[in-house]
Structures are given as C-alpha cells and as structure tokens.
Amino acid sequence: KPKHKVTVIGSGNWGSTIAKVVAQSTSEHPELFETDVQMWVYDEKIPITPGSSLYDRYGGATIPDGPVMLTEVINTFHENVKYLPGIELPHNVIANPNLVDAVQGATILIFNLPHEFIDKICKQIQGKTLPFARAISCIKGVTVDEHGIELISEYIEENVGIYCGALSGGNIASEIANEQWCDTTIAYNTPPCDLHQDTNGSSSNGNGSGVAYTHKNARGQPSKTKLVPVPAEYPTLDHDVFQKLFSRPYFTVNMVSDVVGVSLGGALKNIVAIACGFVEGHGWSNSGKTAVMRRGMQEIIKFANEFFPETVQEATWQESAGWGDMIVSCTAARNWKYSKMAVERGVSVQEIENTELNGQKLQGISTTRDVCSFLHARGLEGNYPLFMAVEGIVDGTVNVEDIPRLFRD
Ligand code: NAD
Image 1 (tube, rainbow, N blue to C red):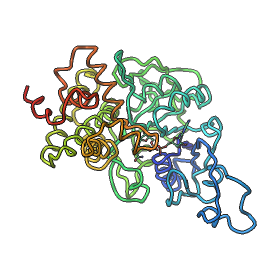
Image 2 (cartoon, rainbow, N blue to C red):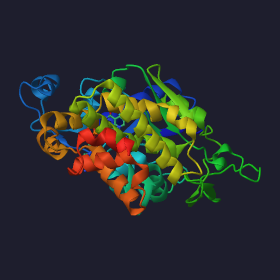
Image 3 (cartoon, rainbow, N blue to C red):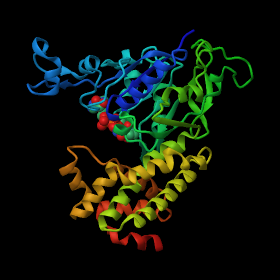
Image 4 (tube, protein in one colour):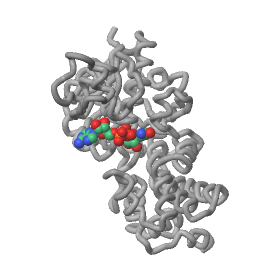
C-alpha cells in the first residue's frame, strides 16, 4: 500500500522546527507515512573559519577548503546552523537544495517560508507536484491591497492546483524546537472527493488521473481549481492523518475547518501587536494593553465577518490561532517589542527598522498599511478605530496619547 510522503518547503526558523516535528511523527507512524521527510533549503554558503564550531566539528584533515553549502551542513550534522542553531534535527529530515526534486512524489506539501517568496516558489513547482498532492500553509500573512484580500492558502491552491489548508497559532519557533509545550490550530476542510465517496455517493477510487472535482474554496464559493482525488489506496487524508503528522507530546494540535479564520487571525494580530507596543512604550501598563487586545480582537472578528461571512466561524477566535496568537504576539514577539522601543526612544518605527532589524521589516507595519488602504477604498474607516489609529501613528498623523479618545468618539 502506498504511504504519504511529506515535504517541507522552507527551512528557516519555523520551517526547520516544523520539519523536526513532522519527521518525529513520520518515524512513529510508518503505517501512514514514508519515514524520510524532504526539506527544501534555499541553499547558501556557510563560512568555516578557524575557531568556529563548524571548524571544530569537521575536524583535522577533513576541514573543507572554503565555505560549505548549508544543505551539506544540515545533512552531515543534522542541524540548521544558520536558522535553528543548537537543535538536533531527526536524521530522517533530508535537506534538499533542488525544489522540484524535493516536491516530487510528495502527497503532503508543507509551505513554510516568508510570504514574499511564495510567488516564486509556486511558479517553480507548477505542474511538478503530484496532481492529488495536498498542502498545509504555515505562512502567516494574507495579501491585501485596495482591491481585495487573498489568503496565502488560496494563492497556493490557485497557483499550484492543489487543495491547501493552514496552520497557525501562538507559536514561537525556538520554544517548540526546544520541545517546550504549546498548542496550535490546523484548518483543513477535507475535500469530499478525498473521503473516497464522491458527492453522488459512489466511490471515487481515484488513481490520480481522470475525474477532476469542483470543491468549495475557503470563501464557500466553487473553487477555480479542479481537484484530482487522492487515490483510495493511500490512507485517507483527513483530520486524523494531519493530527498524527503534526502532534507531538510538546505540540498539541486542534483541527478545525475554518481556513479563513485561522489565516486572518495570524495576519491581523500583528496590527494589534504594534498598537500594544505603542501603548506600553507610552507608559500605560497591562490594563491598557488588555484594552487594546480586546478591541483589536473585536476589529479582527468584525473584519472577518464583514468580508468572509459565508465561512468564518465564531469558535475559531477561541483557538490558538485566535486568542492564543494574539496574546503571544502582544507580549513576546517582534512587532510588539520594536514598536514599544520606538515610542520609548521617541523615534519612528521606520527608524527602529533601520537601526535594529538588520534589513528585516516589521510585518505588522505593511499589514497595517495594506488593510487600511483596503478599508479606505470602501469608506469603512469608522468601523475600525484601532486599525486606523495604528496607521495614523505609523504615519505621524496621530499621537499615541490620542488612542483612548479615538475609542470614545
Ligand atoms: P526565517 O526568517 O527564519 O527564514 C527565512 C527563510 O527564507 C530561510 O529558510 C531562507 O533560506 C529563506 N530565503 C532567504 N532568501 C530566499 C529567497 N530569495 N528565496 C527563497 N527563500 C529564501 O522565517 P521563519 O521564521 O521560518 O518564517 C516562515 C513563516 O513562518 C513566516 O510566515 C512566519 O510568519 C511564520 N511563523 C514563524 C514563526 C517563528 O517563530 N519563527 C512562528 C510561527 C509562524
């Protein structure tokens, strides 16, 4: 009987962590999965300088002459020394610098890389995956501009031609990599054709070719992507299989079907995290921050209900992908930390990005601008005072101390 083959696309801090998680599970469930997990690595040169830990590890005469490729280091020492140093990866994680080769034959693709690269990745693997492969996106963020909103999972579905769910939660990669317990949410709306019973009640018994099924997308509308069913010889690819793939004793998974809610929670909480940083940087403490978090969550829920009324589910906000992610983002993560620093130092967030972030950007800033331009284009500013306040503070037209007044008006 064929088993599911898993590939992780991306090997950064979170990609390497998730590769560790799923590789431990594939070893534990040989009845469901092939043991080896391919991890696609955007390869880069790693210098080996005398005195560095890599120099010592290679040791004696085997020290390579010049830099080594990250892929080789991962496959030799089972550690991603650049993006997840200090964590031993299971030996069944196989780093592969060739994207097309890494996805070949995989039935489960896990997308896990910064969202700016997703466009290029999808183009490269178009037509190269199994037609009945299924995907989970661990990428936070949605694409929003004044014209509309696109979920990352929708983008993958339309551009690779396979169904895609989403994983999101109050998760900090280094903590999970160190096996410190937390929980997460996976949204996966199992396509009916994969239950080996098509909508007419007859067995689809697909062989990966032939019938293509129309299914409902995350918005509850017929998807433009026609799905090829997962062949019946494979273990049925439903919530149970994903639960077994992603669950570890230190990583509790809750399966839901609301891809919209899980995706929006992961993206919009960054706007609220920026607001919390501003409020705390101004000197207001936990009570003020709590008020911002509560109002921020109200605006996220309003946004989801206003633009995705057919599919979003109220219960999702109680998940790790809802309140869980909100709390960790507003108390411990990057957007909160650096917006707080900006107010404390009396400088703009842009200046903090330039001086503190080594070329990286605060994702919450671009999300704020994108979401607000979408709302401006529809004349809906009045319904989202917190989102608008963050935009105003970032642009220098609103002061942090105006926040309570904006809520009163
Ligand atoms: P990261 O910054 O650690 O990883 C950067 C990755 O991008 C590396 O694998 C690098 O090789 C790759 N890369 C660099 N240049 C590239 C290029 N030109 N083309 C393709 N790839 C390139 O990112 P991350 O923390 O792993 O985040 C990935 C996703 O996971 C993001 O959407 C993030 O929001 C989400 N996430 C992160 C965490 C976390 O704690 N890090 C937790 C939950 C979710």
